[in-house]
Structure formats: structure tokens, C-alpha cells
Length: 75
Image (tube, rainbow, N blue to C red; front, side, top):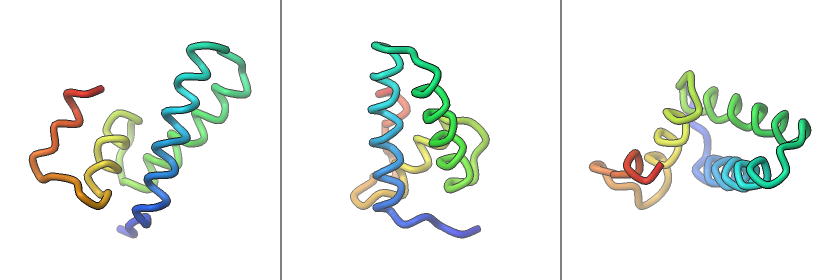
């Protein structure tokens, strides 16, 4: 499997989290569509099939990630 560059993963995570906030505030179709696009890209980039697993996998691939990362508890 190809591995996405950590900078790309970091950017995708940041975009997704920003859009999640916008969706909570706005809820527009454009925001939802962009979230779906980024979720798909994160899933493909991490070899997962849902956004929660993709976010966890992406965070594990970032520099400084711990092997016993507790990011799943922060969701």
C-alpha cells in the first residue's frame, strides 16, 4: 500500500476538523459535500473504510505519534 506523506495527512485532518465545526454551525450542503470528499480521501490514504478509523490511522502516521496513542479516547 502506498503511504501518504505526513504533511498531506496533517492537512487533511485539519481540513476535516475545520469542516466538522462549520457543519455544526452552518450545516450547508457544500460543507457536507467537502467533508465527504475529504473523508473519502483520508480513507483511501490510510487504507480504512470509515472516517473514524481513517482519522486514527492518519494520526498514527504523523511524526511524534506514540505507539500507545490514546487518540481514540479524544474523539
